Image (cartoon, rainbow, N blue to C red; front, side):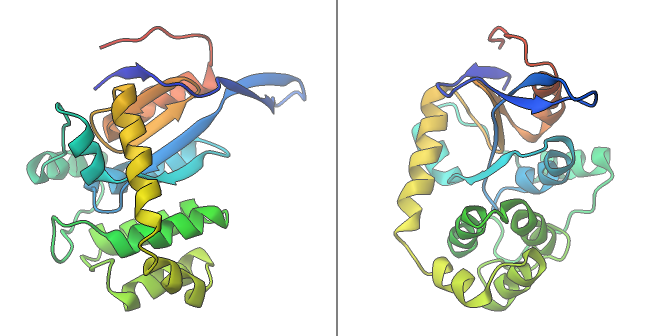
Length: 213
């Protein structure tokens, strides 16, 4: 998957090193904690993008909304982990949706702790092999991210949050995204963890880019 056009606003100003204002495209990282691609991308996204929004989106809804959706299979994920020199341990009940964990992640993102929660949770799942929907494992992720335990577990049980994550995924599918994770840079979507570097290049040089296959 290459770059596809989104409908969101294009740019926001950020200070450069010399104090001048430069234009930087608005950015968001759409993820699903059940997806190994999220784990493989999250560390780089956190390192490369200042101020990026962390937005949960349902992988199953994306697959339902896009006829040509591509899912990173286990063999491909293992190969990418080797290439990236990252450990990869398959979590319990893989593959399976992580609904409770995603609801908790949505709450953490609302509190400005989305990055910290996703990093902690994805490490527990894909480095430790733990089941993220286990309340004790969620408690570990919440503690690592600095999110209130009671509030996190309450959010994990809030099924009303599922609709928002499904809607986000359907919007991505309508815009042309065929896989998760997705990095949005202004009007552009970079789908798949292998597109993180391209997204970073676009963010650092936010001149208008043409759509490419």
